[in-house]
Image (cartoon, rainbow, N blue to C red; front, side, top):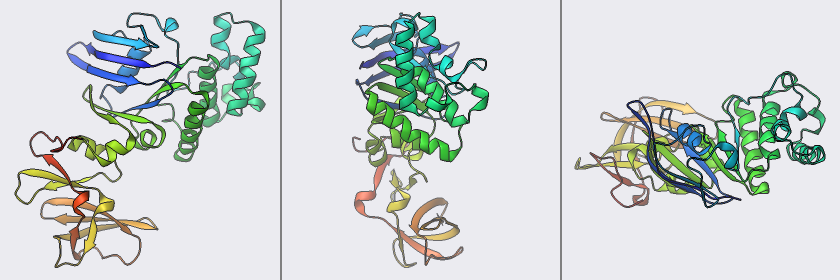
Length: 331
């Protein structure tokens, strides 16, 4: 297992600062998710760790060794890409051991590692097939197998599930997390999907405009967002944000923590839409010029156009500075 450290990493492309002063530590055996919208710098950060790009400033340390200027082959890493990058003319077995073949690993050792990897991923019956004969999920497993067979202590993943349908993504999330824990490898995983980050990672690193906005456990980011950006990005639906009664701050309340009251209680609001989801429903309400979402039981709901009152427990309130968007208490 290897610890990955980034110290003051920066990268520019012309006038654009893609990554700015990123400081990050992925402990040995930890699953770290780099999360954020397109263009926030998460994939560039991963490429810097992988030696696919060179930083303009800062240091990269893997396993206690400064590898800032070392080639990828000397960093002890494996990488899984979004597009699988499989050779169409090679079989599954040949794709998995391709890197070992190039490095002239002994044939018996290649066979041993292939058998072990195929068993881990359930690919034993597919080893003689070509990629064109596989489903999307099977191709993703082959790409994972190529990373696992290298026995690298660090695995980097760049949005590996984005090409799969929703049901298969859910299945693969569980499989990747279980595999990472079983092998004890350090994994750094790039995604724009908060569900992937929140369900898979030990620690989530949320990026914005090339910087780290907040990092911590999934619970940290959900329950104690450091800014309105974090509050709006983490959670589905996002946290409700609205002016405080005095107008000197912004208040945030999660949709599931809002309470439906009578029209004479709490914050008066009008129901503008009801989204029925079965066991629960989302009420979209307007309180003046502010739109708020309430997650409620799926039965006995008010109708569109009804006037209601909205309330919340004191402990559910998140205060933010109106100008900077930063949390008014330390996260």
